[in-house]
Image (cartoon, rainbow, N blue to C red; front, side, top):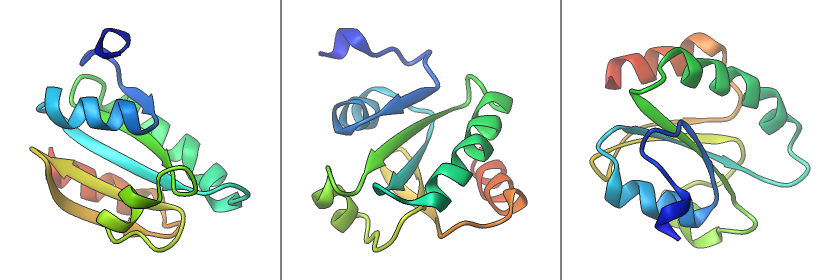
Length: 113
């Protein structure tokens, strides 16, 4: 399974990718928790993708479906979607709940880089 991932990638999805990143990457990891039928999750996607593209080589963006990974959502105290969690060296360093202006995500991510 690890052969399918590369630390050079920016975009990931699912628990297997998340678990791999936690152990293999020293970059900032943006975890976006989403849920089925979440219109705000769809609205947030291009915003985070643009931020990730602007910071290629500095971070990873991984999307996790709360319905498919409820234990991860509970572990990160995520109660609603979308929720964005920032991780650095396996530590949670920031979290934004709900859909916010792009500058809030950019500010949190830039301060962590």
